[in-house]
Image (cartoon, rainbow, N blue to C red; front, side):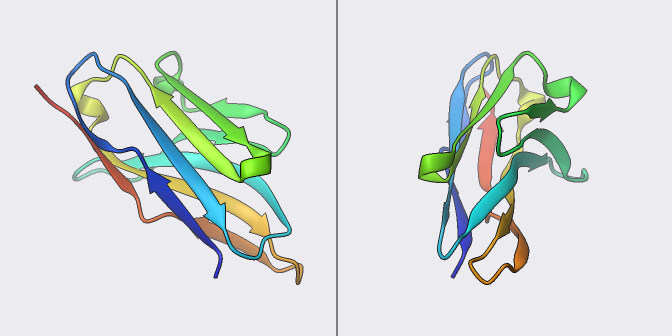
Length: 120
């Protein structure tokens, strides 16, 4: 079974930092674009950052400067370093991946989400 599992969420004070991780597992031939999205209470899910297989990043304009996405293709892992966190960053953060299975089946997967709460 192919899946994405996130970790690293939790409670952090305003101005603090947090690092999220996402790892893909299962029968995978290749992982193409991976990305982080977030969904705050009462709002739609929005892009944080997308990273291609070759490392090209695409940040949402509002996320530039405080959030840094990275990936380790060998580990099938995606990371999100979040600094100078604000209460409005409170959301469930989801990992997303476009991948190809050994049977050349194309899949778009979502992780289960990890909650980040920024509060004093």
